[in-house]
Image (cartoon, rainbow, N blue to C red):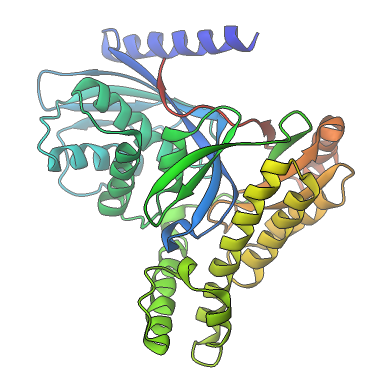
Length: 392
């Protein structure tokens, strides 16, 4: 049934493309969203992170044009775009900047990028913290990668997407979201070392024993208008102070040994000390989580999820009452090993590890008890680790 529904979805996308542009699409691409198991806010601090690609995706149908004209439509966005390649980001419609950022990066590499018609569909909830924006970039990049064509590796395509968001959209994100949407593998987590960068896919040992529950807090947010960029600047300042005081040349916060860092408490303003403490401790939690995944140690992994949330809430200050409330409620449910916020924070989703035998009851209780009593529109689902971007 799932396969039939997928085929129907893609055929509907192709039909809608024909209705909109009066011709057939050349390529259809599927780019998944992501959830980060652990390693939050350390991708841009040179850390190792551990995301998975999820069973929710951006779908793109597209075809090139003979002239330099772009016609962009989305099932989810009311506003469309028709015009030439803009030289700077658009205020309205903002969502097309993720596409044009990618186009500009290919142009910088001296590729002759044609205009194109594109229709997007999505089952990733918008502004949920599951990286729908990165998936738009990845889908566009993969379409152009196949169209031009290019000889870029998967990691090179992810880096291009990151530059598109940094340089054109103005979001100083790390590499994680784009990398897992491209490089993810079914049944595996992506161990991404953002300091090199390099990656490997590692097996999740308890796939048959537990499931990942993704649940929304009810707070939607716009990432670019959040304090995300501020956190990055503060981390850079913390690193500058640490290097000045120690005389060492650490390249990133996650490289700083914890014992060295502890001796600097009096030298760092409190806010910078807490941010750096989260990054350094979170890096250790990632390494411990990789070991727990390999040993199929669900209890240890759940404990690390809880510790990560506490650090993100108290040291990194990116949680909110709704995220704290939801993770606390989930931890009290029978069969839940641990729960934490995932993504940038300030709202969005939680990730929890749930014993397989209790999965249905936890989800049903979440909908009937937690969401209904708070007047929150239910948004929760289980997801396995999925493959990255592909032509469909």
